[in-house]
Amino acid sequence: MLAVADMDQTLAFYQDILGFVPTMKSAEYSIVARDGQIIHFMKAASADVMKRLRGHVEIYVEVRGIQEIWAKVKGFRLRYKVRDLFDREYGMTEFHIEDPNGILIFVGEPTAKATKKSDAEGA
Image (cartoon, rainbow, N blue to C red):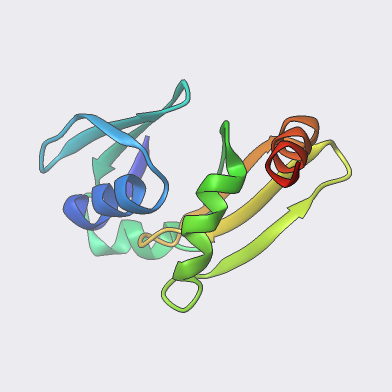
């Protein structure tokens, strides 16, 4: 579970920017899903909780179709902290983005899949 300061803002970010679908929504607890990945959110008990978490929480989300997601996300570089799409030595193609709660999200796909998709688009 990830603690969040503002549930509506958090759900909008994960849905509109990263393509997650809410499967449960309430002011205190919500769940989103995408490509078999499920994230639970819980309203933070206080601003002090969020202050302690900001910049100290990271999650990794493995997706399918990272090129399409990246095409959308890169337009938000001025609004959110974003690290551009790149290949990792451990076989993943990924980008990083910080959500409205200061949580760093690693979004990745096995490089072979990402490369095959790019090659197919160029053909």
